[in-house]
Amino acid sequence: MSKKAAIIIGAGIGGIAAALRLAAKGYDVSVLEKNSEAGGKMAQFTQKGYRFDMGPSLFTLPHLVEELFALFGKRMEDYLGVVELPMTCNYFFPDGKIIKAWSNRDKFLDEVQNSGVSRQVVEEYLEKQSFLYTHTADFFLFNSIHKPSTFVGDAGKKSLKALHKLDVFTSMHQRNKRTFGESYLVRLFDRYATYNGSDPYRAPATLNMIAHLEHNTGAWFPKNGMYGILNALKKLAEEEGVRFLFNTEVIGLVTSGREVTGVRTGDCIYPASLVVNNTDITLFYRDILPNNNKLRKLMKRERSSSALIFYWGMKVKSELDVHNILFSNDYEAEFIGLFKTKLFADDLTVYIFISNKVVPDDAPNGCENWFVMVNAPENVGQDWQEEATRARELIISKINTVLNMDVEKVIEFEQILTPEDIEERTGSVHGSLYGHSSNSPLAAFLRHPNFSRRYKNLYFTGGSVHPGGGIPLCLASAKIVDGMID
Ligand SMILES: Cc1cc2nc3c(=O)[nH]c(=O)nc-3n(C[C@H](O)[C@H](O)[C@H](O)COP(=O)(O)OP(=O)(O)OC[C@H]3O[C@@H](n4cnc5c(N)ncnc54)[C@H](O)[C@@H]3O)c2cc1C
Image (cartoon, rainbow, N blue to C red; front, side, top):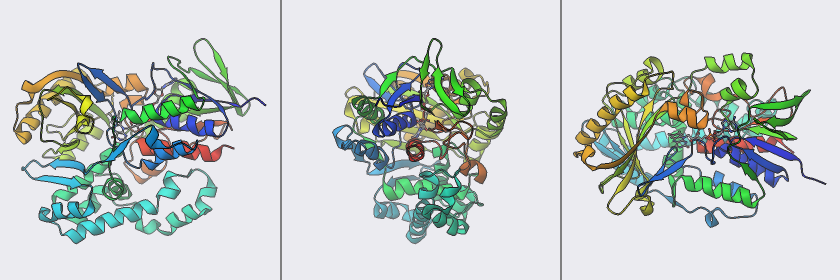
């Protein structure tokens, strides 16, 4: 009997994970991707001897990648080496204070002891985040909350029983402020809201659990860079018979009654007995399966933040770590800029990621590859050239002051990525990194389902649908889809 054909629209990490899961189920899988290569937001480029991961730089929950290899009786380590980072992040505060967030819990607690908060308070806080994660993950991250059966299963019962302890109606910042008072740790833990493009002053405190991932389960890094994850999964997929069709933009679905029977590109129809969409859900209802009603509702929801990134080839060997944060003076003003005025604030928190601290070949000898990022508002037609010029000045002045150096003198290569570029390259509407924001309990927990209510063989994976954005959640979305298909 010939295999049933499954089509995945988009070769983002969520799409590739879904492709693998369907291949493991015996489907004949094709991934149709509009770009000339796989990865979507998870891209890379090499120029003048420097290799840069263009998108994600933080990697938690590697077991979700491992699971995909295990589906075929294979081992992740034969395709992808990962190392646990001794330090999750190196934080620089405006007054000169430095906090090294060691992965080792005891070492981190020692480090923060002189930050105005007792060791016990921090320890209890991390335990609380662990509680939040263990009481929500099975229900929320690995199940469809759009199916009534999820609520009556064990995971649902566990979460519902703990509902009053899940901190849904307090903001992340309120909880952190109540816990840490005026300490540096408020800022340090507020920052986790940006891991899904949200605002700590509005996002529910349940999301403080994001800190649990780095502080309690560890921060990891692939030995050949973040794109190594993508390459490893793509290689596995090809070995397992998944076909990738690049430069192949899907422009519509072919339907019959309550079924999708294929997808349309400019010059072809690809028949399918099952379709998984991995493109931004708003783009999907705008361009692929136009639906004004759904589109209007999706467009009404606040989108997550975007990013402005400077990829700098640096003729320098710095004292920095893999992940470094240089905080601004006024964190709240940055989020007003991100979500209200949609322009950069006058002082910006700067993130510097240097992969060649782990991957020596990512930069020439004696040099470093700096990925310098500031959170940016979604693209609503700002003049990005002007915004990038202004942000660049702010960034350079901050780095010079905090790190006591003359940055401009050592930049020997520069490339810039704006929210507009992100939108253009990946199809993410308004260049948002994580689909919609999680700036309210409803927004955080109620995203588009992983299945279509109208078409019984149409599914959704990736960062703009349940459970949300970021590599682990995209992988979780594919797992949820897997659970819905025989
Ligand atoms: C700068 C940046 C930094 C980030 N940092 C982190 C981080 O540190 N940690 C983390 O976990 N996450 C991070 N993220 C988020 C993470 O990258 C995303 O959540 C994740 O990669 C999204 O994957 P996805 O499966 O939703 O697919 P996407 O990456 O959104 O890919 C969708 C694919 O669909 C394709 N497509 C679109 N339209 C069509 C069409 N009509 N036909 C065919 N193909 C189409 C696109 O070309 C694209 O390849 C970051 C993202 C960015 C951009």
